[in-house]
Image (cartoon, rainbow, N blue to C red; front, side):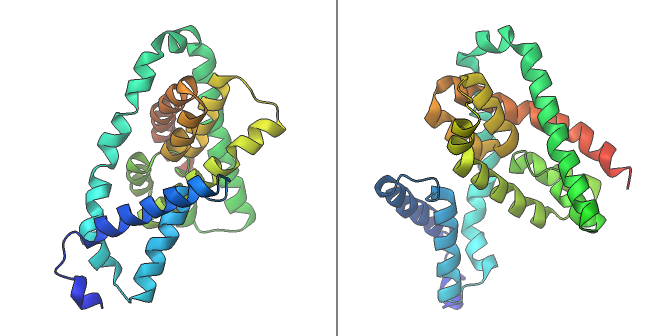
Length: 230
């Protein structure tokens, strides 16, 4: 079956889009956190590749077009941020402090966990940029000596998990302020979290978009500093 698709340039992107469309339909029918469209579409795509014995490189010939669009799609998140620029200016000090604290907490927890589990330095460096968007995380991981493949996987899992539990966490801790919700989602779950934040409201989406940018900058600065200690 793999040979049939080796000359088909668009197989990967068609499979990805079709899987995501099915996942969205499932989410509409079952609107529960577990039925995250990205998670379901990933499982569907993996299932097709395994069942029909299709090599990943064959799939990736077309799917890499989606990867190419990752960076410009991230830039598009600046639109809701621009619309809420007055809120950003008004709460700038609190926003910067919140995002810096979030980045430090995320990376320090990874360091402590890896030390407790006696994980290798490569794994540690691969996990440090887990909470920033993939386009930035890959560069940071490669810069500090991590494995970019592991980084991509953990970034996706982090985003999906964050989006799945966000509503329950907000309800449990009685977090109701839209700025707090947006910053938390963007800082912990990057672009996938931002997609979830937009569901909560425009302010949440704008703040989450901001978090992606600033958390990325903080991580680019802080991750090499932490990595240099090992």
